Length: 98
Ligand SMILES: [Zn+2]
Image 1 (cartoon, helix red, strand yellow):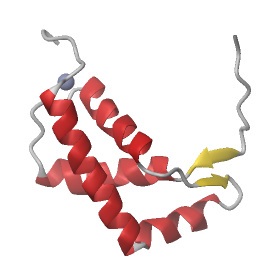
Image 2 (cartoon, helix red, strand yellow; image 1 turned 90 degrees about the horizontal axis):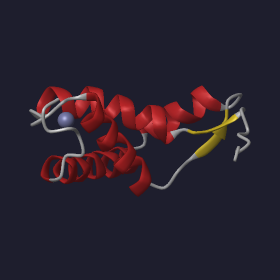
Image 3 (cartoon, protein in one colour; image 1 turned 30 degrees about the vertical axis):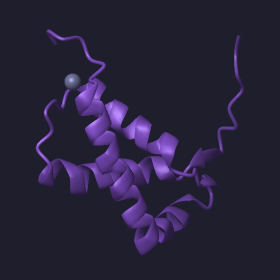
């Protein structure tokens, strides 16, 4: 089965959550495991808990920047990221010997 994807539509939270993770979580919070599986799981879990903010690629950069600068959005994202880190660390999905 194939699913069509509207190529000009994307969730603006994706790049925002990734940059918050890299700028605020990684430097300040020593992850128990920073393998690709665990870091991806943290991002995915966070994105699933936050309300998506869909935009078109044309409106993209300005829209993302406005969301990124929003203090309420910043605290929501950080809170959700911190929660996801705890969840993933308590139940890592990676292979034990990786
Ligand atoms: Zn891991």
